[in-house]
Length: 331
Ligand code: AHR
Image 1: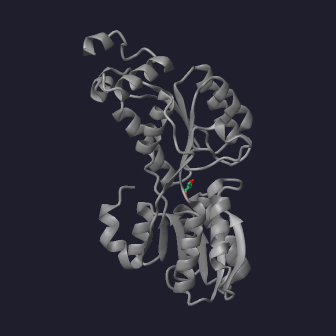
Image 2 (image 1 turned 90 degrees about the horizontal axis):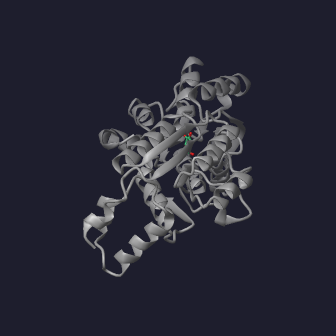
Image 3 (image 1 turned 180 degrees about the vertical axis):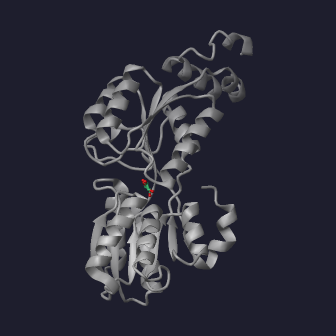
């Protein structure tokens, strides 16, 4: 098919599902080259509802999605929920009213999404979940989930710590946002990883909401209560660990040696803290989800089948490798 025939579909016009399906069928039967379709495709309009900006990880994820959207010529409607589910629900309803082609959602908590996801489904707008999952009775309410395995992250942290501490530690756990998938699963995975280690005891566990300031505040209170009984800190993200490190230093102890500190995310600040000897270990959680999210959204819009879940692989980094890899970190 000559490209001129596709020209009437000007970039600002919303492509209908049936036209997309026809183009994909033409590609499948060899009548049309994929590059011609890409050149002629108008811009998709996609709504992205983000949790907020509570951590360096979150900022990296936002940046990845915004820059990938721009690279693909997507009209991105971005909404920052400032950590509140009701703001995310409002944003989704507004995206639906604006008839976006697809929605990317990073849900702050796991529950409470069914009604708005039903509205999106009724409006035939596919929802791609990024980074965190939801609990719904009907999995057809979302197109796909692209995320890390948070349980595996917690387990990797536990295994690393048990080895480092020689099977004996009194641990303080700083949890993420209550009700959020990573807070629930990183706790679960960590506890499972320590199940066969009777000498590894969690003596306190409190939420620091994935925020640096809260991590510091909670750690100060726990130091007041438990003092030098604490031999290790497990934080559900790097920002809270960095806050805890400040609190430990202010109490006159040395993070990284007097107290083992480990966390999850693998942001640049964590690598800097490891190089400085203050953080012992970070379990990576990759926030660079833009390319996968838009691949999924484009496929969902075209009606292509998607796996229900894509797991993003993560690695463990500690002080032994921090210096050699810090320059290659992308976030
Ligand atoms: O959902 C991923 C978690 O959310 C990251 O670990 C944390 O930093 C963020 O805010």
